[in-house]
Amino acid sequence: MKAMLLEGIHDLRDTDTPLTLRDIPEPDPKAGEILLRVTTCGVCHTELDEIEGRTPPPCLPMIPGHQVVGRVAARGTGATRFKDGDRVGVAWIFSACGACPFCRQDLENLCPEFLATGRDMPGGYAEYMTVPADFAFTIPDAFTDVEAAPLLCAGAIGYRSLRLTNLTDGQRLGLTGFGASGHLVLKMARHRYPHSELFVFARNPAERTHARELGATWAGDTADTAPAPLDAIIDTTPAWKPVVEALRNLAPGGRLVINAIRKEAGDQSHLEKLDYPTHLWQEKEIKSVANVTRRDVREFLDLAAEVPLNPDTEEYDLADANRALWELKAGRIRGAKVLRIG
Image (tube, rainbow, N blue to C red; front, side, top):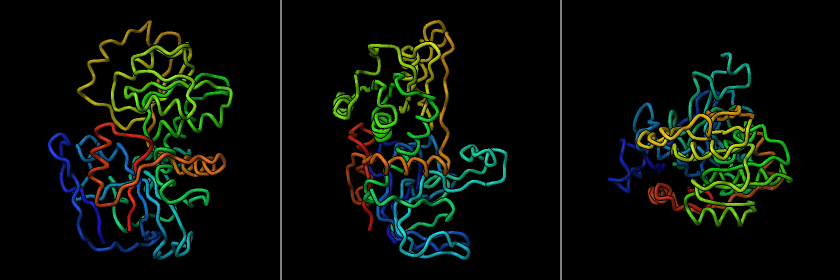
């Protein structure tokens, strides 16, 4: 089968081809696993973190990709949840132990044995992949394969972030950063909180225009002051400056939810501007988001089908994965980038 392999850690300032297209053996499903013939896979900022070594795979080479849609091509022993030909999706959560205190509390995203698709286990930048059947998801008929792919990460992690804001209808919500996840959260929030005003902070003028087109009440630069204090803000950026600016825009008792797997070390100088009375006083909160649970993915897919919530997408062939990643790194984003495979 054909697959795009990460064979070493790269600085994307030095190369525009960090992944290599190879012919490798098709995997065999183990007991409890299914084999997927992959049709689409979303492209995520987390792949940039893997490539550049901020969230490196535990071993190399590795096949990236954790927003995967495909058809069941074969089943291992005991994998009876799906039948051959079923359309299923795979998200960032590849597996968890199911027995630790976190898993027993429906917090499998915090499981110490959590494995991530495309980082800890081979992902969807390939024609085939395997996954435990219990960690695959039925894709609603409302979506094409291209539309469904970004729902599995950008959408699901956005759903968890929105849930963690504790927002109620009528309260003001801010979004810092407006890529694949941000634009889906805005669409979601408009549906769930029809009386809430939505404010978007983005340094890219094109992203601000996109936000207004999708119904944002207001859109400004990351460093701008919103027209009114915000009850909750979701930050989806890899930088520290938006965190400090978001805290400044929070109302008393407001909550900042940071939806990012990492923050850039070289950007920490902005934390020196953190002023307790301005940014943290009056019971403001900061909550981070770590991974997703299966519950997040299932509930979000149901919600997305109900709306329906169709992501804006840009399509690429598997062989063009490097170009999609480079454009993502350069901030050339309008919605979600998706690889067509096979």
